[in-house]
Image (cartoon, rainbow, N blue to C red; front, side, top):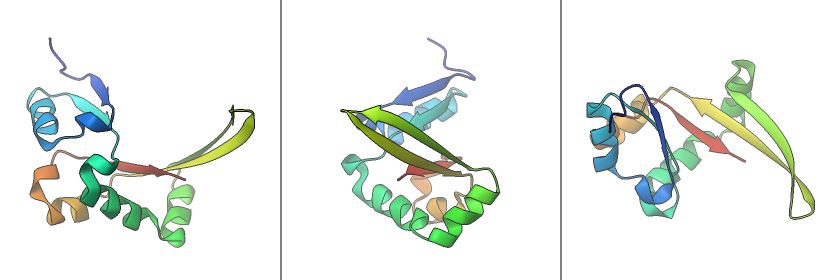
Length: 106
């Protein structure tokens, strides 16, 4: 099966460096969740988005969205932030060099 120019989404269990390398070699794109399976990566991303001024900057640049949904009888509002600034991540760990963008939700 070809993944060339396709977007592959995988739950956190699939967020593995080997999978990302294979997708990159096959010219595919990916959107992966980061949870406890990649503890250091998760903490790095959380720390990166923790700065409120940085999140405000992303809002101004249009790298933000907000969604309100009814979940379990309650209204939940989530804010999503995205950036393509990944140089810092790649410097920390070259094995994530295929990552072109990261996001976080609050």
